[in-house]
Each structure stands twice: as C-alpha cells, then as structure tokens.
Length: 83
Figure 1 (cartoon, rainbow, N blue to C red):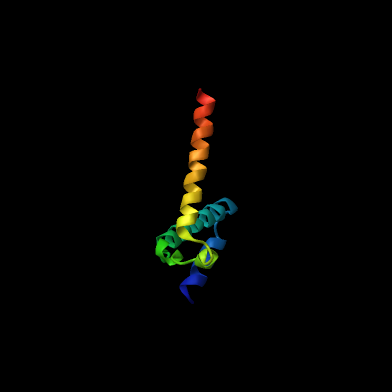
Figure 2 (cartoon, rainbow, N blue to C red; figure 1 turned 90 degrees about the horizontal axis):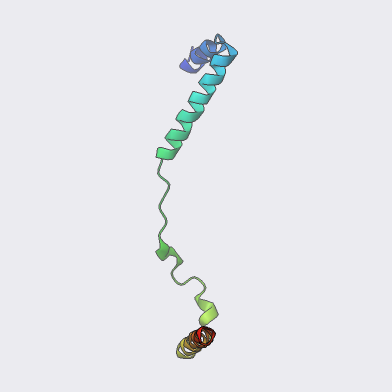
C-alpha cells in the first residue's frame, strides 16, 4: 500500500473537525511551499525600446521645447494666481 493510501485511511478515521483542521494545515503547508518557489524575476530593461515607433516622426528638440513651454505656462498661471 502506498503512503498516500495509508494517509488517506488515517484521515478517514478522523472526526470531521479533525479532517477540517488537517485540510487547513495541508493548505497552509502547500501555500508556504509554493511561496518558497521563486518566480523568475523580471527586469525593467525588458521594456527597453517598447513603443519606440511612436516617436519615429517626432523631432526630439521640438518636443522638449514644447514640454518646457507648457511648464512655463503652468508656472506663469500659478504665479499669477498667487499675486
């Protein structure tokens, strides 16, 4: 007889409360074992180049200038609200 069947027979001889406790303990044990199995770590570098095609037709300096201008607009609006 295999050890599984032996354990199953022993579990069947337990009271329903003991069986529930055994199930809870086994479930907890399995969760702990699964948590110890390390998942492969991901690297932020895997995202390198993702979406780069959307920038193909954008002039980098022009984009930076527009962004800076929008910051200045926000700063000027904020400073005007303080006055």
